[in-house]
Length: 243
Ligand SMILES: NC(=O)c1ccc[n+]([C@@H]2O[C@H](COP(=O)([O-])OP(=O)(O)OC[C@H]3O[C@@H](n4cnc5c(N)ncnc54)[C@H](OP(=O)(O)O)[C@@H]3O)[C@@H](O)[C@H]2O)c1
Image (cartoon, rainbow, N blue to C red; front, side, top):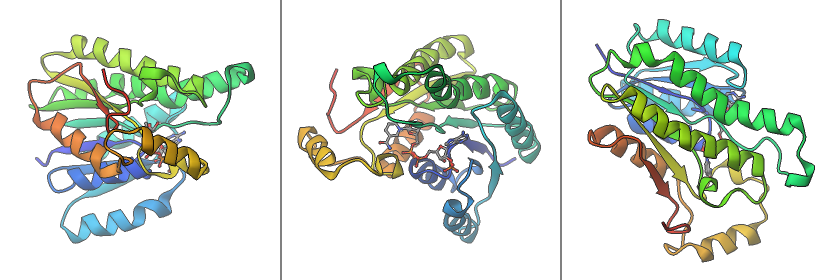
C-alpha cells in the first residue's frame, strides 16, 4: 500500500512546498480552503512525475469542517495515514492587544490551534496503522517572542507548541509528534508588509536572508526520517532567534 501524507493548508506557499517535497514517496492528500487555482500547477507537476495527489476543499476553522475533511481523507486513503502536517493557519487580521475582540481571539485560535488539535485527535486511529507515523505541526517564530503585530496569533501558535509536547508523550512510541517554528518565510503571509520592515528583519538575521518554503519542506522530511525525535520544536529562522 502506498504511504499517505495529509498536508493541510496545501494551497499556501509552505504547504505547496511540503506537498511537492513528499510527493515522490507519498500519496498526498492536500487540503485547500479557497485557492484551488493555486494548486493546479502542483497537481499537474505531481501527475507528470507519476505521483498521486488528492485535493480536498475544507474550512478547518470549524469542527464540522475538520470532521468532514477527516472523513473524506480517510475514504481517499484506504484508512491508513502515515504523516499529518498541520500547516493551515495564519493571521486573520493584524491587531494590538488594545484592539482585541472576542471574535479576533476565537478566529485565531480556531484556525491555528483548534484545527491542529481536532485533526490530531481525529487521525490517531489511521496514524496508528503506520510503522513510521508522524504528526508535524507548523507553529511560528512568534512562540519565542510573541507576535508584535498579532498577539492572538502568537498565543494561538504558542498553544500548539505546548500541545505538541503533550501529544508526543501521549502517543509515544507509536506516533512521533514534532513542530517547526518558521521565522520569516517568503510567502503571501508577508504580502502587504512594508519592504523596509522586511529589509530590517533580513538585516537582523545572522544568515542575512529570508527563508523559503523549501527550507520548511526539507525540515518536514528531516523530521519524518529522524526516527529518534519526538516532542521537539525546530526553530527555522536563520538565527533571528537563538536559544
Ligand atoms: N510564511 C511565514 O513566514 C510563516 C512564519 C511562521 C509561521 N507560518 C505558518 O506556516 C503556515 C503556512 O503559512 P504560509 O506562509 O504558507 O501562508 P499562506 O500562503 O497564507 O497559506 C495559508 C494556508 O492556510 C489555508 N487556510 C487559511 N484559512 C483556512 C481555513 N479557514 N481552513 C482551512 N485552511 C485555511 C490557506 O488556504 P487557501 O489559500 O486555499 O484559502 C492556505 O493553504 C501557517 O500556519 C502560518 O501561520 C508562516
